[in-house]
Image (cartoon, rainbow, N blue to C red; front, side):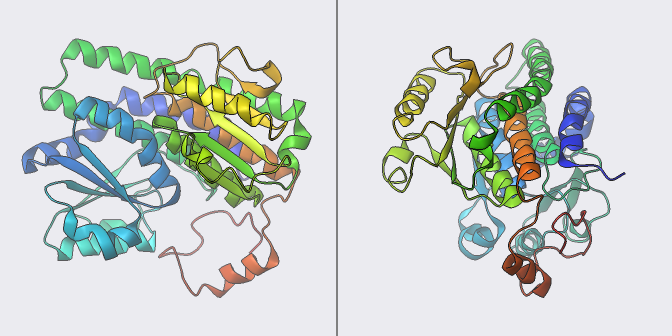
Length: 370
């Protein structure tokens, strides 16, 4: 029997623990190249969930490495940004290793005369034929194209890469390193709780999550990447319109098209004072819609509208478990609505293949009956 998104969501903790337990070995090649080349920052080039995984890891990485970290979509990078990035490790990311825009970016980097590095989720991929170094981030098998454990494991791998690099550069001593490794493993333990919370609240409020109105996700900082991935997952699976916005920026225009039919999810970072402001925004939105939910332990929200865990972590690690909530909700929403089938015009668009996004066919299960 073929696996589902939910199967891969439930496999995620084991994958994350494996990456953390083997952090030094799995990231060694990247760390060695970074140090040997004398880079002063990192430039990620990634699309979709890979881009969002980088967004989730970026605040953690900057906190420990204290360097510039850029994130670009491949098309923008190749056509508009490549000539303006200097002395940074060019690190393209593609779980399939076959995204055509990522392959184009690798070629452009090499044509520029720089070294091209690539993170992939599978060894059999076309990126290996182009990149100077291709590193598998050890996600394992994931045959559903609407990736879940892939993006969370990518964020975890990048976090591990940053602490190994910080240690190699003398920015972190052994005691602090061991403490962070332990804290990351504690964070992974919360992931299954988020899955169960998604089930609990979905069952309590099924009508809110299965209507065809817009889904709005709000956050900032580390969990802005979580919100971006949640919006992407809802859109590509349930085909319900989703919108993501930085929490405060939402008040400066994007608020106005919203209606009482819209569903709002606010993702708390577990920090202050930004958490205080985001919770205030969430409560204010209750004047707009009754469908306001928070991923937070804040006691001011009723348990029927708050996805909670037994513990909370620092904001930098929190995407490793908070992502699971939105991934599970997207799966449940899809199974209760369109069962992954988009409109016929989208099926025809995909069949026409006029603008192919992958260099190989049949990389993932055909859940959309295309």
